[in-house]
Length: 212
DNA sequence: AGTGCGATTGACT
DNA sequence: GTCAATCGCACTA
Image (cartoon, rainbow, N blue to C red; front, top):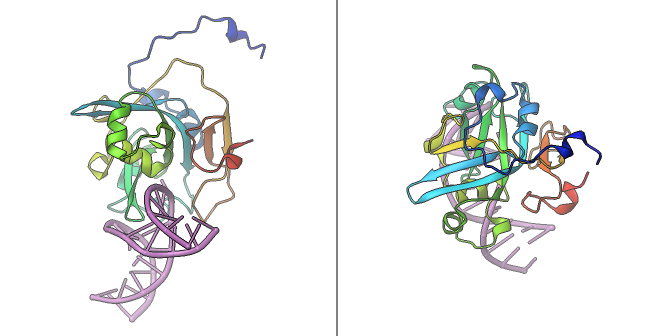
């Protein structure tokens, strides 16, 4: 309340440009926070599907929970690309996870995209997931990938360029961002590296985890 | 070559 | 709440 920019005219026009790499924070934690509220766009033969990013996790340099911790492998090499590239892997043999590489070239770190608020192409996402309920379409990293038909074929893609999968800016005011421990990891679990849009029903995990 | 184990999800008691 | 599915990778031999 009482914020000076509250009197500025609000632009309702959509921003249709990809995020410029130069505007991405170079630090992994800053990027994880920055991506909250941005739009993830998937272009498919049958149309465009997109959603607002409402939940992310940072996997930082030197992080024992990060896939880059033991160096580069065939699977994780995209983590070492310049910030803004897709790192996609198969978790538990069942679910694909979408990450955004987050550091300078040669440095392995990334941000996991954990949940989206569906915006465009909701029918495409419903058909891809085999469910109707809007709230569950992209609530969780594996569900999100399934909804947008993201798999290893998109690994290494530059998300700062229009293409099959890319990141779009948004002019609307971002809501308040909450912070918590990351979900589903054993090592370095106490660090507050998860970010989410406060009050959003599209954030994964139990409600109680997403307060404060 | 064999074993153990995940940055998860959906089905089920 | 519990649990299996399923596969790439790290590790041992």
